[in-house]
Each structure stands twice: as C-alpha cells, then as structure tokens.
Length: 432
Ligand code: C2E
Ligand code: MG
Ligand code: MG
Image 1 (cartoon, protein in one colour):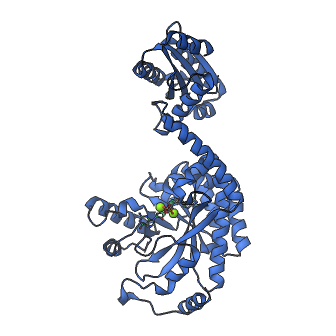
Image 2 (image 1 turned 45 degrees about the vertical axis):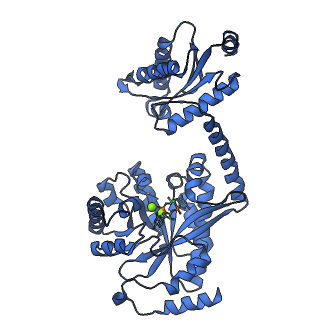
Image 3 (image 1 turned 180 degrees about the vertical axis):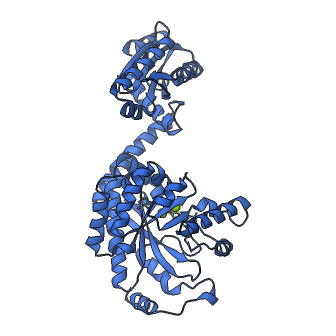
C-alpha cells in the first residue's frame, strides 16, 4: 500500500481499496466444519486473484476479510466495475463436502487520494463502507462517504455512553397502560425504557436498543429493566393496585444463559408473584430457532410468568409452533392497526389474527390504537385488550398513576361498578 500511495502521488493517479468480507461465513464454518471453511476461503481467494490484473494486489487480512488494491483507476466507476465482478464471481456456488454452498460478499471501497493518503485511513474508510454495505442488506458494495466517519464515531460514543449510563443509572422506565376493550379498565402496564442522556436529553429505545443488542450491553440493561419493573409493580401492589407488569425481552436476552435465574431473581427481589409478570417477545425472536424457543418458554412458563408475542404479524410464524408454545397473548403490530378503519386488507388481517388467537385459546391485544373509531372496530372484532395513545402514551410512574381514577371506560353501559380497588386507588393518589 505504501508503494501504491507513493506511486499515486507521483503520477497523479488514483487507486482503489476494496475490503471484501464474506456474509455468514461463521455459519458455514460452524455447520460444515473448519476444513470446509478453509476450502471455502481458498476457493474465494482463487476467484478473487482471477479477477486481478498483473499489478493489482490481493491480501487476506484475517478471518473472512480480504483486501484488493486496484491500481490506476480513473474514477469510482472503474472501481465499481471490479466490485461488481467480485460480487458475481463469489456468488457462484462452491462445492464443499458434497454440497453446493452459496456465499456472498459485502464490499467497502475507498479511493486514494480522495478518501485518504495513508494506508491506515484508507483501510479504515473502506472498512466503514463495508459495514454500511452489510447494513444495506449484504451482497452489495458501498463507497466510503465522509458521513460514515461521523456515523462510526457516533456509534463509538454511544457505546461508551451506554456503559457509563448503566453505571450512573441514567435509564428510566415509562409505563403505558393496557386496557380491557370491553370494560375500559386498565389491566396492566408495559414498561418501556428511556435513556436520560446528560447531553442529549431523553432518548427513546429505538436510539440505543439496537446498539445495545449488537454490543451485548442489552443483557445488563435488560436485567436492570426487569428488576426495576418488578420493583415498581410491587410498590403499586403495596398501594393496592393489582396491575400486571409487562417487560420486553430482546432476542439476545431471550437466548442468554441465565435468563431463568435473572427472572427468578427479579421476582424474588421484589417479592412479586410470578403471575403478575408478563414477558413480551417479538415474533421474530420466538420463531428463529423455534425448537429452542419452546424449551426456554416452557421453563419461563413453569416459573408462572405470562408470555406474549409482540409485533405479531410482522414476522413469519409457524402455526404448529404457535400451538405448542406456552403463550398467553398475541399482540397485533401497530402497522396493521394504523389503517384498520380505511384499509380493507388491514381490517381482514386483524380479523384473522383475532380469530386465530381465540381458536388457540390465546388473548389478543392491539397496539398503537389512536382513535375511537379504531377502538370501536376492534371491539366489533372481539379483540380483548388495546394499548395506544387513545388511552395514554408511555408515562413516568407518577403520571401513570394519575390515569387510573380519571380513566373512564369508553362504553359507559359496560362500566363495571366501582370496586374496592378504585377506592384504594384514590387513597394512593392522595398520597402522591
Ligand atoms: P414495543 O414493545 O412494540 O412498544 C410499543 C411502542 O409503540 C412504544 O415505543 C410506544 O411508545 C409506541 N406506541 C404506543 N402507543 C402508540 C400509538 O398509539 N401510536 C404510535 N405511533 N406509537 C405508539 P417505544 O417506547 O419507543 O419503544 C419502541 C420499542 O423499543 C418497543 O416496541 C420495544 O421493542 C423496544 N423496547 C422498549 N423498552 C424496551 C426494554 O426495556 N427492553 C427491550 N429489549 N426492548 C425495549
Ligand atoms: Mg412491547
Ligand atoms: Mg410491539
């Protein structure tokens, strides 16, 4: 690279750095064994060297990452031609252990001198571009853009912020009510985490949960959420509010060793009866490796906690697994609720999910309900519960409490008589 940089400077020409990373190499290595993995790398190396001109350079940096130096490119189109050749060559099936194996590469490209004039910068920029190619959906290439640098720096900052934020208790839980459609009563609360960032203010989970998942920080963060939500549920129960508490578990938490012990620990620290805890798992998390999910969920269910499937309808459910899983509830994703009143298709999908849930003896809840029309329609379908801005957005705990006495059922004729619970609620409210 040093020579290429010097030559590019002397002759005022460009060269391109292509970082080529194989998608899902680890899966192939794990399933077919290391010998097959080595053969695959050798075959990819042969194909890549077949594409090069005499002057070009090919190297393997390690693992499944290769680097190509393409000399004397006039512009980015020249580099793009090579990238497309790499994509099509690597995509051809490879014979391994008697099988036709398919791999695809993700490619990041930087140009010298445009994107850097030293090897470290050029490689780092090509690497950042490769990361974006992976994000874009793999089997593709990306040129480096300065914004990617800012993006990479931001990620690093966010990651270290997450670590210190955990230690310094910058996270808090907000609660959103789940309401019984027939009676209008608030039956439970969903705990939704927020990050009170010292500089950026309140960050919603979409801004840090994906990174927490990628880095594994979701495990300690999720543990804190579980402990805090159980503690809050217990505190409300001590004040006379028999609310169930729902907590979201990410895919990674769900598959983490020690999940059962963590859940048991959170319940016992709070002295909360297991039936008051509900765990929300996304459909995608449950259905990826459904056989293992059955085992984990049976153990959770043996503890006595309830389990529901979040964002239902956005993934691919196997109906035979759905029947075998110890589930309590399906939660219809809000993308189907949004246009339920105006879109016939969405209305029919929701109708089908409600009847599917009921025939499996499951409860069904709609999320993202914002209007009275949506609620009326859901009621006509026999949907059991709803959640959404129509009742309330997620709120800090003290504000959540104020919902309880003021909350009136939408349908007054089905209003349940005030119970002992209601009087206790007023007592709690006088206290706060
Ligand atoms: P989710 O579990 O599907 O949560 C529902 C999301 O919908 C919440 O967003 C909520 O604020 C929003 N929402 C509620 N009602 C309405 C409505 O009427 N209209 C619209 N447009 N949106 C509504 P939020 O709080 O930003 O959470 C987003 C996602 O982050 C959650 O989706 C959940 O997947 C994840 N998440 C939140 N807290 C945790 C946590 O403690 N652990 C894990 N693993 N994930 C969490
Ligand atoms: Mg949820
Ligand atoms: Mg959801």
